[in-house]
Amino acid sequence: MALLEEYRAIKTEIISIQEVARQSVSTSYVALGILAAGAGFTIENNLQGLFLIFPFLLYGLAWSQVRSTLAVQNISNHLQKHTIPRIREVLKREDNRRDYSFVMDWETHGKGVLRYYGMWAVPVAGAHYGVMILGAILSFMAYFVFPPEPPLQKWILYGLIAANVLALLYSIYVGFRTELSR
Image 1 (cartoon, rainbow, N blue to C red):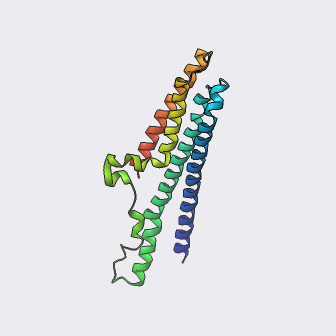
Image 2: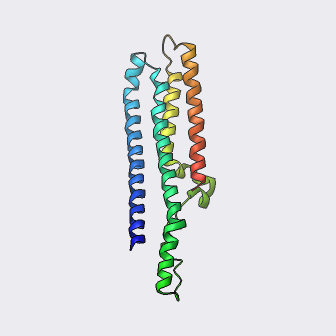
Image 3: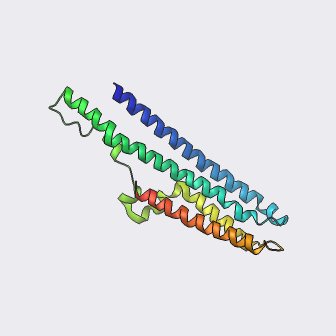
């Protein structure tokens, strides 16, 4: 019975982590709505520099998504490598004439969309944080479409551009690595 309690506790933790991930997605939609609603005000008041700062909120939300995915992966690996085999062992001791390899077999299926469908599944696999990355890119581009007068000081502008490019590349890299490891 202790093993089943452990299993239930682990599954509850996974569900809790997934709920946090869903909240991050909801928060990103709210943030994108604020960006869209506030774009006119930002441009009218010559605050376009905010378009270069706003992406960092979205990058943070994307990284939170990656963190949630990695946490669920770690917990799922523990289930697959330790808890489920022990549950099967207990069942096997009770009745060694039956094959219990199918017990809790659902834990090994349904993982890694990219593994099953290849690169065609990239939009699906990355959708949970792709919206955040796309929003960051659009915000970044908005600065150049609607540049402020006078423009930001060069060192601030170049620093924000470099930081955005690095954060974007890091986000894409970490996102792909995370999805490929599932």
